[in-house]
Amino acid sequence: MSSITTLSPNALSYQKKMLNPFIFWFAMLFKLPTALFWRLKMVHLDEQKCLVSIPYFWRSQNPFKSIYFAALAGAAELSTGALCQLALAGKGAFSMLVVDFKAEYSKKANTRIYFTCEQGAELFSLIDSLQPGETNQLTMLSTGKNKAGEEVARFFITWSFKRKI
Image (cartoon, rainbow, N blue to C red; front, top):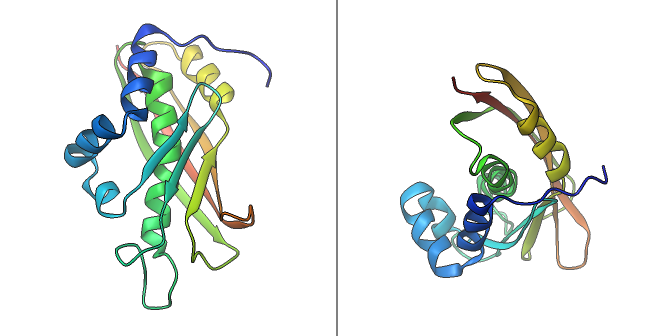
């Protein structure tokens, strides 16, 4: 999809806040405290993609010397959820909810992992097409890669969106 979306002032404000480490930390303190515990970091967020990283260290580690699957899932969900919030910013009242979740693990996660979701154009199009009272879903892919660029995991997170009346 090659359509370029211009971010609304509300979306630009949300983007700026999420990319500011202090504001991100403060927001996560109240909205998603495990993101702080696992030291998730918002690396990139725009209308095309979101990139979140998770370090490999004692708080995210399982007994098998790799990153705990729930920590990986949290980072993957944040990479899709932040993109959803960006798409919804300034567009009225919506509800959003995860309605399905699937994970595929392919390599041991024992270094910093970067989760990328690149479905911004598709997401913005879906959000813009919803009429009041209408509901739609989108399955978003977040791919986790290590520093060497090797794929570690894929998460398929299905979000349901409803434009409120």
